[in-house]
Image (tube, rainbow, N blue to C red):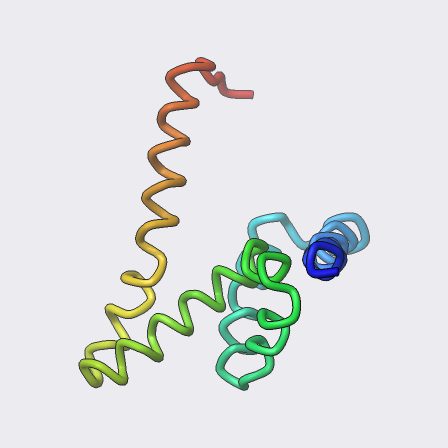
Length: 117
């Protein structure tokens, strides 16, 4: 049952993004920013944690999950170090994911020789 919850929640988040691309004039970059900000906003209101508890990776893998990770990192850092945690918490919480994306992007760029369109 957990796999089903992961699948349908993640699928709905992705389907909403696809509808926004198809039916609005929003660019994919603006939708990306919208999803990250929405994740931060919902986490700040305490509304995203129940979704994460219910759907697990279906809520943490899409871009809203990145916003969730940023907000949780800031929250933990503020509790630990105070005001300076506002500036360091999000980076600390997401550093491993960002580093992995950069590393694997570089490796694949070396392997597949990307070209400009």
